[in-house]
Amino acid sequence: MTPQSSILVPVCIALFFLQCSQVVTVSPPDAPVGSGLWLCQPAPRCGDQIYNPLEQCCDYDTVLPLNRTRLCGPNCTFWPCMELCCPDSFGSQKFVVKLKVLGDKSQCFSSPISTNCPRTNWEKPT
Image 1 (cartoon, helix red, strand yellow):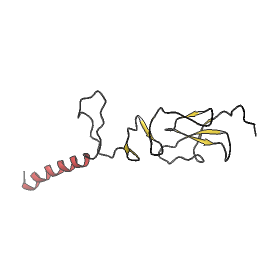
Image 2: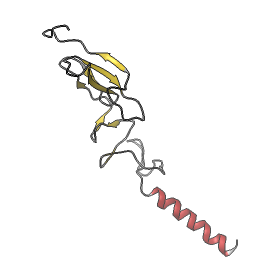
Image 3: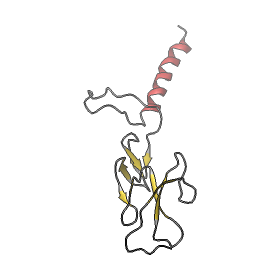
Image 4: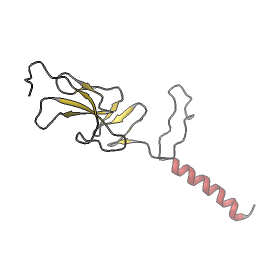
Protein backbone atom coordinates (compact mmCIF):
# COMPACT_ATOMS: atom_id res chain seq x y z
CA MET A 1 0.00 0.00 0.00
CA THR A 2 1.40 3.40 -0.95
CA PRO A 3 1.48 6.27 1.56
CA GLN A 4 -1.15 8.14 -0.48
CA SER A 5 -3.64 5.24 -0.47
CA SER A 6 -3.09 4.55 3.26
CA ILE A 7 -4.21 8.14 4.01
CA LEU A 8 -7.04 8.17 1.47
CA VAL A 9 -8.99 5.23 2.97
CA PRO A 10 -9.37 6.70 6.50
CA VAL A 11 -10.22 10.11 5.04
CA CYS A 12 -13.03 8.60 2.92
CA ILE A 13 -14.40 6.70 5.92
CA ALA A 14 -14.31 9.84 8.07
CA LEU A 15 -16.14 11.85 5.39
CA PHE A 16 -18.84 9.17 5.15
CA PHE A 17 -19.47 9.26 8.91
CA LEU A 18 -19.45 13.07 8.98
CA GLN A 19 -22.12 13.18 6.27
CA CYS A 20 -24.30 10.69 8.12
CA SER A 21 -23.84 12.27 11.56
CA GLN A 22 -26.34 15.05 10.76
CA VAL A 23 -29.34 12.72 10.32
CA VAL A 24 -31.59 10.64 12.55
CA THR A 25 -31.41 6.86 12.62
CA VAL A 26 -34.70 4.98 12.34
CA SER A 27 -35.28 1.67 14.07
CA PRO A 28 -38.33 -0.29 15.24
CA PRO A 29 -39.33 0.43 18.86
CA ASP A 30 -38.37 -3.08 20.05
CA ALA A 31 -34.98 -3.15 18.26
CA PRO A 32 -31.76 -2.89 20.27
CA VAL A 33 -30.32 0.60 20.56
CA GLY A 34 -28.04 1.48 17.66
CA SER A 35 -29.45 -1.19 15.32
CA GLY A 36 -31.26 1.33 13.09
CA LEU A 37 -30.26 2.10 9.54
CA TRP A 38 -28.03 5.07 8.81
CA LEU A 39 -29.83 7.42 6.46
CA CYS A 40 -27.54 9.70 4.50
CA GLN A 41 -30.27 12.15 3.61
CA PRO A 42 -31.98 14.90 5.58
CA ALA A 43 -34.85 13.82 7.84
CA PRO A 44 -38.26 15.30 6.91
CA ARG A 45 -38.93 18.54 8.76
CA CYS A 46 -42.10 20.38 9.67
CA GLY A 47 -41.24 23.88 10.75
CA ASP A 48 -38.47 23.23 13.28
CA GLN A 49 -39.56 19.65 14.11
CA ILE A 50 -38.44 16.32 12.61
CA TYR A 51 -41.25 13.86 11.88
CA ASN A 52 -41.73 10.28 10.65
CA PRO A 53 -43.67 10.36 7.33
CA LEU A 54 -44.77 6.74 7.82
CA GLU A 55 -46.78 7.77 10.90
CA GLN A 56 -47.18 11.56 10.66
CA CYS A 57 -47.64 14.45 8.25
CA CYS A 58 -46.86 18.14 8.20
CA ASP A 59 -49.94 20.36 7.94
CA TYR A 60 -49.16 24.08 7.99
CA ASP A 61 -46.03 23.64 10.16
CA THR A 62 -47.86 21.31 12.58
CA VAL A 63 -46.98 17.60 12.93
CA LEU A 64 -50.18 15.49 12.88
CA PRO A 65 -50.75 11.72 13.12
CA LEU A 66 -51.87 10.28 9.77
CA ASN A 67 -55.21 9.12 11.23
CA ARG A 68 -56.22 12.58 12.58
CA THR A 69 -59.60 13.83 11.36
CA ARG A 70 -61.20 17.27 11.47
CA LEU A 71 -64.60 18.75 10.71
CA CYS A 72 -65.24 20.23 7.29
CA GLY A 73 -68.32 22.37 7.69
CA PRO A 74 -70.86 21.42 10.35
CA ASN A 75 -71.33 17.72 9.47
CA CYS A 76 -68.48 16.34 7.38
CA THR A 77 -65.05 14.98 8.36
CA PHE A 78 -61.77 14.87 6.47
CA TRP A 79 -58.15 13.72 6.97
CA PRO A 80 -55.95 16.86 6.93
CA CYS A 81 -52.88 14.76 6.04
CA MET A 82 -54.47 13.66 2.76
CA GLU A 83 -57.36 16.02 2.07
CA LEU A 84 -58.37 19.68 2.02
CA CYS A 85 -61.65 21.18 3.27
CA CYS A 86 -62.83 23.70 0.70
CA PRO A 87 -65.93 25.88 0.25
CA ASP A 88 -67.98 24.71 -2.75
CA SER A 89 -67.92 28.24 -4.15
CA PHE A 90 -66.99 31.71 -2.94
CA GLY A 91 -69.19 32.71 0.01
CA SER A 92 -70.94 29.32 0.00
CA GLN A 93 -72.10 27.48 3.12
CA LYS A 94 -71.58 24.14 1.31
CA PHE A 95 -68.21 22.37 1.57
CA VAL A 96 -66.33 19.79 -0.46
CA VAL A 97 -63.38 17.63 0.55
CA LYS A 98 -60.59 17.57 -2.02
CA LEU A 99 -57.52 15.35 -2.31
CA LYS A 100 -54.08 16.78 -1.64
CA VAL A 101 -51.79 16.27 -4.62
CA LEU A 102 -48.57 14.51 -3.58
CA GLY A 103 -45.48 16.67 -4.01
CA ASP A 104 -47.44 19.87 -4.68
CA LYS A 105 -48.58 22.69 -2.43
CA SER A 106 -52.23 21.67 -2.82
CA GLN A 107 -54.88 24.33 -3.21
CA CYS A 108 -58.66 24.11 -3.30
CA PHE A 109 -59.11 25.44 -6.82
CA SER A 110 -56.75 22.92 -8.45
CA SER A 111 -57.29 19.71 -6.43
CA PRO A 112 -59.65 16.87 -7.42
CA ILE A 113 -62.87 16.40 -5.40
CA SER A 114 -62.91 13.51 -2.93
CA THR A 115 -66.30 14.02 -1.20
CA ASN A 116 -69.26 16.39 -1.40
CA CYS A 117 -70.24 17.22 2.15
CA PRO A 118 -73.96 16.93 2.85
CA ARG A 119 -75.92 20.14 3.35
CA THR A 120 -77.23 21.01 6.78
CA ASN A 121 -80.97 20.65 7.35
CA TRP A 122 -81.47 24.39 7.97
CA GLU A 123 -79.78 25.45 4.74
CA LYS A 124 -82.02 26.58 1.88
CA PRO A 125 -81.20 25.07 -1.53
CA THR A 126 -79.99 27.58 -4.10
